Image 1: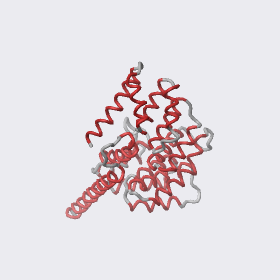
Image 2: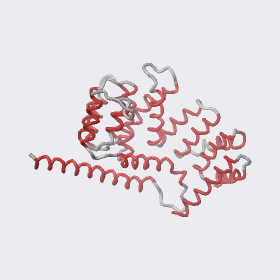
Image 3: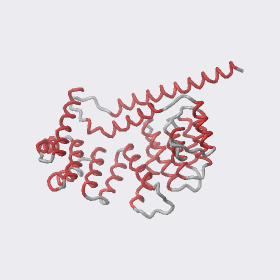
Image 4: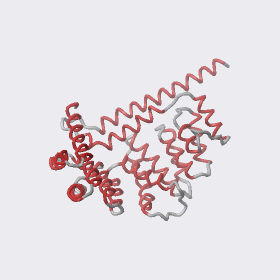
Length: 315
């Protein structure tokens, strides 16, 4: 019996080590795909790509291997025990998902299939996807075939397909994610969506995050649709995000307008957009503001140019 237990424990360790190794391989592959090796490298032009990599690096860092502990957490969840750390179901799901263990995966699958709470299923689907295990995709596909799916369900599925699509470079899954996101995310401009509660902001930010990671025309179209709903520095901030997605032609005039006629906050946001574009004209405008009478503006402009120069010398 002891031999069997030892063998099972060793198999568990091997599975975890293999999962970690696979994520390391994914990271290295993505790094080569996303980041260019050029002398005139502008780190701000690749903020999206750096963000994609940093998220996976963070997931790797917080993942845990002590499977006995996850059993205790699952038992606490089932017994509705709350304390200073685990205040609700979402806190439990977030922590349990960090364990690279069969028990954790089975727990998330149970929540997806049986938990009546839409927001709990939403997080469970997303966190299961972050395992990046191909074997878990079948359950997500099966869930997507249900007859009646809520807005939250579709957003969760869109998030899951985005995660798998972006981090495994799977164009079909990215396309599937875009179709699901397009069907629900544009409605978030309204504050009167039936069936929504205080989690509205979480779901809106979920749409923002998904499109940003997906990038491309679908993301630019989504963020452009938000421009008309924003004024002042919030509009400039959205334009800065669009620039990070690679759209410079339509965003540059917004930054120029803010630089010349905007408030201090508008100018600070415009500097963020100009540093992404990184053209001769954009850098000239930033250079002009290194001597601004506003200390925040001059300091930010100086730091931007300093960071670009530093990164280029490192390359």
